[in-house]
Length: 205
Image 1 (cartoon, rainbow, N blue to C red):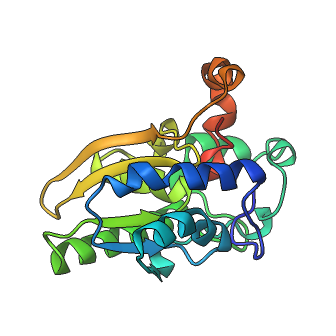
Image 2: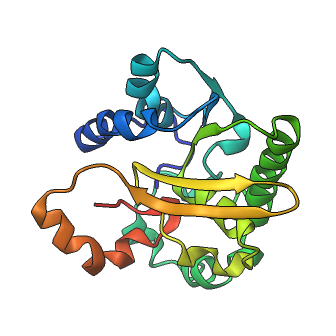
């Protein structure tokens, strides 16, 4: 779980997926691109920016959660901790040791989305962020209890669209996969659901 650990870059598969995102994103009417300041997000959107001749703007409100002492630890080891069950079942009451709570993370994301909606009511923003951050935004748009947000799956290189009106939010689609999967990967998607429904958004397929 990389969290905010610096110098974490895309894998070869991630680089391939980033290139595959160019065409589907190009079909969207994007007015402005906001990106988490972490390297892997900037790397993900770079092929599109080059193709579209656009620039991106770093936005700290959409940075990855601060996992504190859990940062840079393997999920295999974290699952052994007694706190793991609380993270999965009662995240609203959990704060990562020396890190951030889910409540505060959701608050900063919602606050910024509300601000953008108020300031730019007729603009479309492409926001490049992280699994848990996107899940928290989706949960808020549906008025879900924070304790239920782990039921949402966000895979790498997927697109989620929300019409974020401060009065009425509408989830248009979630976790839309636009990159190509190998035949073997397609067969593993459902079987590996447990690996996808985890902190950080999961490793995807």
